[in-house]
Image (cartoon, rainbow, N blue to C red; front, side, top):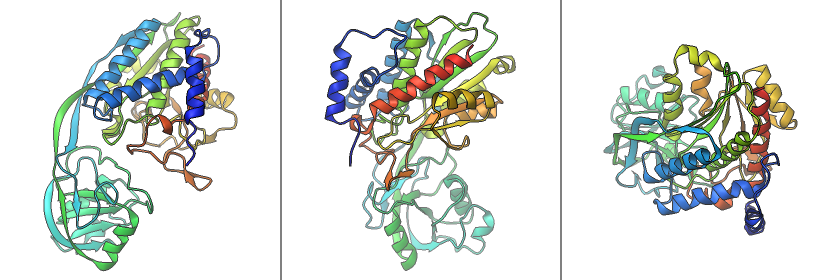
Length: 416
């Protein structure tokens, strides 16, 4: 499959990077973001192949981001955030299925070693009513859930299920890891690739299911940078998450957003100060439950929340089969984004990323996005989403630069 940051583009970008630095007013280019992507790739390689929250790779990412922004002239703070960390001690077991390829454990799954008969649910499992008459000790199978994994798993647990399995929607590729948002599920909960899930459901097979995992408190750090405005009455902020999933280096999700935000920060610091105060946020533990952004917004006093004119989120802005999309819940933000990305599509403002805590606090939000598992021309926009292959070759550096430039211009306009 074609990957836009292939040798030709990467080599061209590195040659450009060796040239004298461009003036800050010039457009952000592929070479600019490749510098940061290469640094993040090196961090992941040196730290077990990932930059997951609560691990050394994310701590090194924090240090890199903070150093670059301080050097550019931003006032930088790295406040700690404590969150429930989830990890597995051993690969999961679902009968003879292959771990990683056919079955993955959902984050915050309970632990257990159970054997039981698989019983497919007639309905989604999103309501306790869907479990009426469910035989205790069976293994529930949800084939078409329409709510969160957590809600279904809690309903299954209360009904006496020994474990809960989910058809993931993937036929050929391994299922994508996902979170149940926090502790509380005590039974094993796993996502399965569709063909083996359907086989188990049709046969109502008896299988052994085993998960060996733990949850403990760990501490990560946000990076929050500020440039005071000439009046300071309003705040305009952009942000994106620092962490990867444990399965890979997370160079598109969300190294692309990190690279874009650093370049935006360096350009804005060199430009004349606007009336509004500018802030950049890099959030820890987004992949577990938006922990970093929730902690930041939760600590804002009411008067400070009222100062916010806009928050823009950058998450996955360099997908290898990209479709640029924007989202906004305020006309002024929508106009600013549409002006810089006139042909971009629209995606739901309800999509799960770090803008949600801001939106919940009444702060106007928007963002840009280029795709995850959605399909374009018969292919996923990011076939390496939440997988080990989300490395340098999985990032479209030219698209990342284009999104960074668009967000820079939009932020500058919103800050006037």
